[in-house]
Length: 368
Image 1 (tube, rainbow, N blue to C red):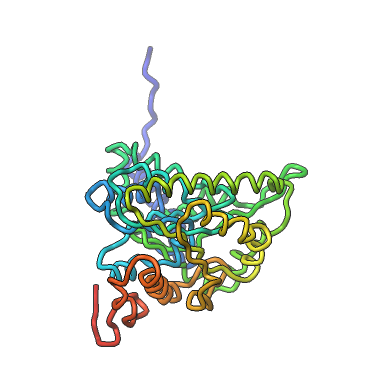
Image 2 (spheres, one colour; image 1 turned 135 degrees about the horizontal axis):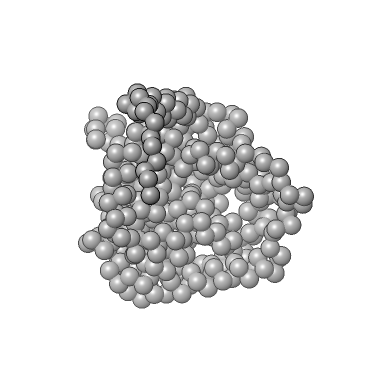
């Protein structure tokens, strides 16, 4: 077969031109999101979760594990907790994800002998939200190439490019446009970026949620979609069945953990405004929280029972600002040490905490 003739072209100039066009387009996309306020940060991926989970298998089986959905993730600051306890907790929370799959994984892991704080966000915990539960399986099945890819990405790509944030990737932006819908199909606006994460999986609220009124209202309106009845909602009987299944699963996992001396503490962190009203209406305390504690036999902290856990700023009704989370964490920690896990670190919990989470700020102490 004769070779197809290739016409003579200035291939060198074409290559340079294509490279310049690519750099212009990528640079423009990056500039656009930087101007919007998007920071270059790590992606909250299954790979990053797996790195944290492996700490237990690598000799930290007696550590404190923070487990829950986004409220434990946002409101409990890892650096502050680490300074209080003297060691960094294992942060295994995931936003929009009920924690029971991860709790069961810990229950089946004989290497874990520490303590676990389980956050209970009523709609997520009792509503069977499973957005990121595959991270548990990923952590146990992660291949060497996936580990290498995660390491390369978190060191050479994610910290430098804001547009690499999945919430602002081109395909995400295109998918969330209000395209024409089929008749009878309700348009649902997906949850937007609310937090910023670092390499130790410490999450805090993105400042734009706090300072940009339009973005804050967008976040509230997205929550409001769940507050209204929808044809896709489960029936009351289905909702009660799902909640009971979650309670039964929690009881099974807690029994395994407590049998080998692991302390389990459930925590209902603050919510407010329309979000709290929705939770109280659709997930009444007696049917959910009280039933959970009764079935598991584990202790619990409900923010409504403790004045010191109330009065924090929740811009979109569900999560604290960064400054408030830094202030809240030692209060919660002191309460846990006082009433549930012993007084060994209570003194440090009452020391002043600066805005960056550094202890001993009043005496001029610093940390890096």
